[in-house]
Image 1 (cartoon, rainbow, N blue to C red):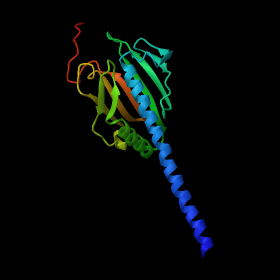
Image 2 (tube, rainbow, N blue to C red):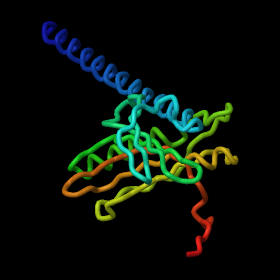
Image 3 (tube, one colour):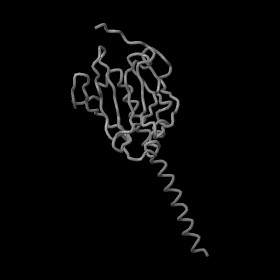
Image 4 (cartoon, rainbow, N blue to C red):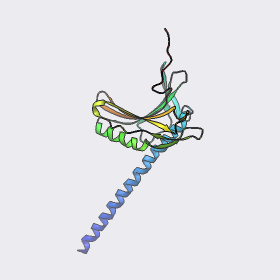
Length: 196
């Protein structure tokens, strides 16, 4: 009887250690992603100068650049300069490409949990916290986006937005992305009219 107890105790201890070490390994990965996002947000004010690499493509409307920061968990990332009077920039990271809607939905929810209430410096030592309500993706909708707004709301913090999106791409791909960008004007604010 004594001989069977020792292996059982040893097996139980090894199982507990392996599960606890697995949990410890997951935590630094999510912290690494959040730290990378803080770097991206902090560099937003300088048009991503510190993480903007070589030009990938150019068109009359946009110029796309490599992102020199390897965001933890991202398949790829890039920075885009949009042609406008202000020369706005956006940063985008593709976090998952999959044929499974359920996997995409799980990734979307996990990223939301990490991004909601993320505290970051947006420049000039202005600390903000990004917040948004969760919206559960539905397969038939083909597109879900959550826009995180910076709090407290100031002139500087109102311009920077962080977005999480899940979108279907033909023929059979779901993509989960995180974006950081300038918002030129509020949704209800009207643009200038141009007479022709």
